[in-house]
Image (cartoon, rainbow, N blue to C red; front, top):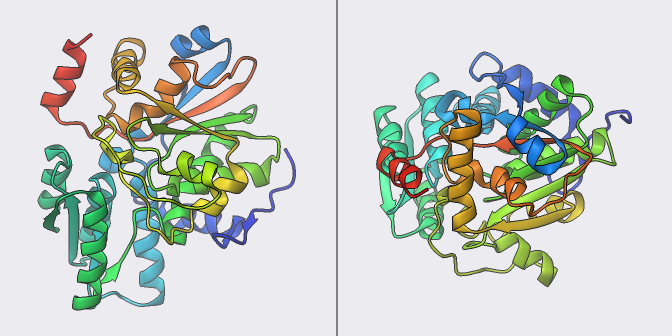
Length: 329
């Protein structure tokens, strides 16, 4: 690997930021397992490893960014209150961080957010507000923060959230130095921005694939247009990936710069991946969490001959939805 020299003008991210984030959040998050998948390795002719963020505290990678964002802010000043918009996982993670440090939090979620996610947010003491869809939730949350003086923490459009997510790249490359490819889901782009920037600056030959649900493709559509454009998202099992990013998101430029390709997966492929993770790995994974696995299993990306890290990003799926998915196959 080349000398680590991580810096992107677009998101202002330096290697020291990622290392500081890791040190900052270490008492509050897990160093999740990186396990080899015989099932996927045999199916693809690659050496496939799963980064199990589904086993993270709050059962999603979002805990990394949420704790880093809150703790970094508290080093500068103590916010009077926090506000966010979330499809569920960021809200749950931020609620955990807010409770840890005694901060009030209001979370705006879309009306169709999974009950397992909203119940966990409420259980952690955050106030819940419901909006018609994710895009509306984000608009309403920002307006509420301005009205009340609360500090808005985006699920993805925040340099400290991105730095927290980037700690995944450090762990993977330490645990499996032969890694030469990453496959990651894309929602708002915070996860892939941080991981791709870190991994590419550590090894410029690193291959990065992003995965969107076919029902919601804001970044692949925008890359074709050469600028960020709004799409009309459809319903998807990968609820955590649905919706448009902030029109001013800092994640678009690093995706342009560091991501080699974006592929899409169908609802049927998401279902197959969830079932495959149960059968092949004995893991419970939500739709968004299974997106990268779906792309690999469906051969949407050619990994043959590579040592690939596939991020399993979350496990927060409603029991009834999970049962329905499993019984559909």
